Image (cartoon, rainbow, N blue to C red):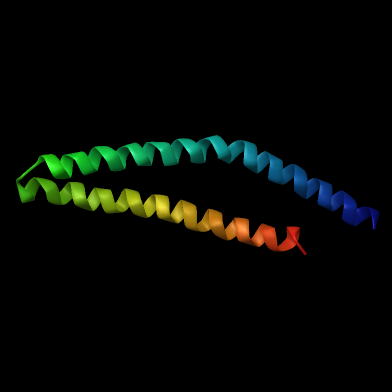
Length: 87
């Protein structure tokens, strides 16, 4: 039983290390992507020439996809952890 408790403590330390390493990075990534969405949306609305707008639209979908993937997998992790927390 003592070995299980020690392993649990080691895992908690690993979780804290990962949290401290990635929380600020993920926040900066999402904030930067949000600003890019705003600027790209403005460029799409500002230009009338479709040939200029098409690359902006493609970039816009890529940035939205990036934020979606970050949120989707973060939600999967959160759901997985909550299963163990509330049982």
